[in-house]
Every structure is written in C-alpha cells, then in structure tokens.
Image (cartoon, rainbow, N blue to C red; front, top):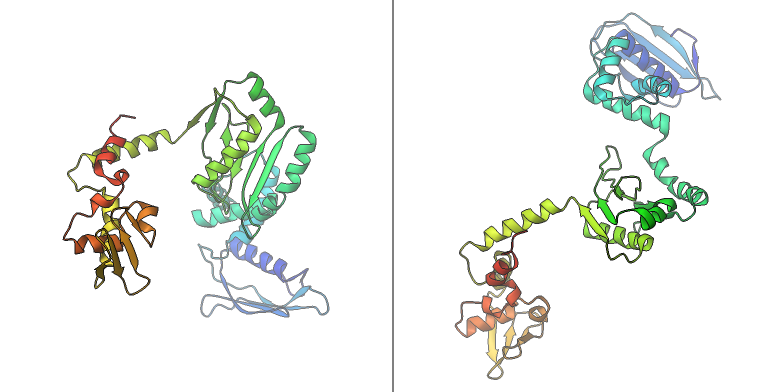
Length: 370
C-alpha cells in the first residue's frame, strides 16, 4: 500500500488493509468511515501508523492520500476476521474442492501461512464465509429449489417433489423422490422403509433425510423438528408414491424412545397414589383453585346452579353435564362441578373424571412389556 494508490471501492480498500494488518501483525482503529473518506489509526497509543483515503468523485474509487507505515507489532489479530480470511480460504478451497476443510486444519494452515494466531471461532467463521463465496448463500440455495425440482422432473420421469411453505411463504420443508427409485422399490425391493434424521450444521438446520434400505432417496425437512405434523406430512407424500402396501414395514429410531416412555410410566403407575393420574390430579387441583368465593344454589335434586361472577354454570349431576361444556369436553370435572361436590360435602373429585384418567387404567395401559 502506498500514497495515491487507488481501489475500486471502499470495500476493496478495507479488505486490502485488513489483509495487510493480518500479515504484518498490527491492529488499527477506525476514526472516520463514510461514503467520502476512510481514516484509520494504530490502536496502540503513541504509534504513528496512519492511513487516510478519500473517494474520487464522481466514481466509487478510493485513493490513499496519507499513509504512515511505521507501526508496532501484534501477535494476535482482531482483523483476522471472516471477510479477510474468507477470500484467502476461498482461493485455496476452489483449487481443492474434494477436500473437507475442518476448522482445526484451517487454524493450523492459516497460522503457518500468515504466521498469526487464529482461534477456532475465527477459523470456523472464515470457512463459512469462504463456502458462501464458493457455493452461494443458504438463502440463494433454497430459493433455487423450485427450479432444481422442475429441471429434475424433466430429466427423471415419475419424479415426485413437493415444497411446503409457512403462511408468510418462507420455506418450511420439502419432499422429493426420484422416479426410478419408486419403480424399483415397488418391483424389486423388500418392503422396508428406514426413516431417520440427518442433521446439518449451518444457518438452516434440522435437515432430515429418509432412505429406503439405502439412503439414496432424500425427502427432507428444514427448520422443523420430528414433530407430529412433520411425520404426518411426510407419510402422506410417501403414500402418494408407494400406495397401498400390506407388507410395508417402517424402521425408525423411535423404538428406544417408546420403550423408555413405557418403562417410565410403568414405574410411575406402580407408586401409591390417588384415584387420578398425577397429571389429571394437577388439572383438577387447578380447577379447584378458581372456585374461591363461588356459590351454589339448588335447582332440583340433581341440578345445581353455580355462580362464578361471570357466566355461571348449571350442573346436572345425573346426566353428568355442565353448561360450560368443560366436563363433557375434557372428561375432567370443571370448577362448577367441583363447587357442587363441595356443596354436597364430597372431597374426592376424581370419581367424576373419565375412567381413562384413573391410575387403574394408567397401570393397565403399560403393564405389558415392550
């Protein structure tokens, strides 16, 4: 760098200065930076290093007007950031596309090449920036999915591809299967489908792929966990591909989770408890808390009116109904029913819940081994 040297724009000047600072082991502080001028000082007090550049109107070019290159040396570099290290890595990675670059290798190579101390985080960010320069951003890649699927369908007869977006039209998940794979699976393959997740590292994570015996078919979901909606959506699209298949068997990684779920509840069911399960008991207790200062008036032998300072409720104990519909809808006694039971001097509210919420049913559900 020298006085009267010009650069195409301010970004090129900043990159060149950052690269120089990294190589020569010094650090600088920005004093002025706007569309017309750019001024830097060495961050060490009393150091005379200084650079001043201005824009050559009416172009975007910047010319160095003042440059004092006397400086102090720094062993570590805050300017060894992704925008300085990334382009260097980009050139190296472009020539060796087959190699998988790991941050530890980048850290080692940059330390040897530039003779600087780069930490793991700097190396990781530099790699991500270099990959973006090499392959484009994640957003650009996802925006090209419709074009990619369209062209793939033209070259692969029978290919199935779907893209699902959220209400704001942002990418949510996609499903695709090559046509030849569908035909081969129906005609020649054992009817076993293995479903598993393959998680990526990057801005767009939780990417899942599903393989039929071998992971050569890759419907995938992005930014979605293994929720019920994801599984339902995937299986609906899968059904469109394979149709009715009586011998079809699914293999997933959920077997251990299901087994653990059942074992845990079998142990819980063996503990001494009240009539209701722990969860149902908490719901009923919460409903009871709301009945403070409520009042009850009898309408007939089995019908009661509960005053709750809002809409109130009429409870029919014989028909097991309440005008608030909570009792019928959930199978658990609402606050109005609980208030009637209190009025009748009954303290066990669990008997008014559905049998499905009782500990007896809970134990029976998980009594068989999995």
